[in-house]
Length: 245
Image (cartoon, rainbow, N blue to C red; front, top):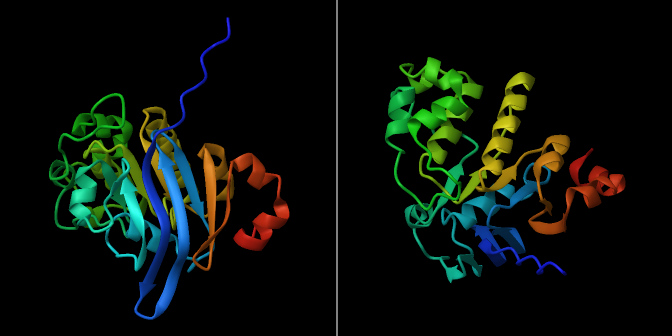
């Protein structure tokens, strides 16, 4: 008996023909990108190519001059960032945004809420401490008493406590020690396995291609590549030209 065809992936977040400016500087040029439910996308490119601007546009932190941002097929281009977040999108910015004067436990407590929960099980503070035992050990430490790696763990844990359907990580392992980078990538793999979609900005080609379903490369605000990791790895000239690898 012939098995039924697999259902097409459901698009969760989509940017269509986005043109974003900073003043007179045209940063994004007709950029289109989509993330399906449960999908992991690696967003790559050299510094200054528009990756963070694209994320900020998708999150409503920057308004595109042209184009649309759609969430579950609904136009959310003009929605406030908090309204987009409440619909199940969690964002870990490059600077992490940890509250320096609050303890680890307090940073987590202010983020905890019921959400759309893209994962199979709701995230709680106890579950975050299981994921990051290091945070459990430092639960009384203030944010400014943590290492860079610990701050990144806290930022990810805080984002998970909103119970998102999509987790966006900007510069997931930038500036971290190799052993901490490895721990963060393992964590991303665990998050991926729970069914939460992820959009990851990182320069580590080997790590991104080992976990992503698709890779998108930006060059000067334009998408120059969008395909599977296997296709990217089979094109070393393309990687060298656009990623310097």
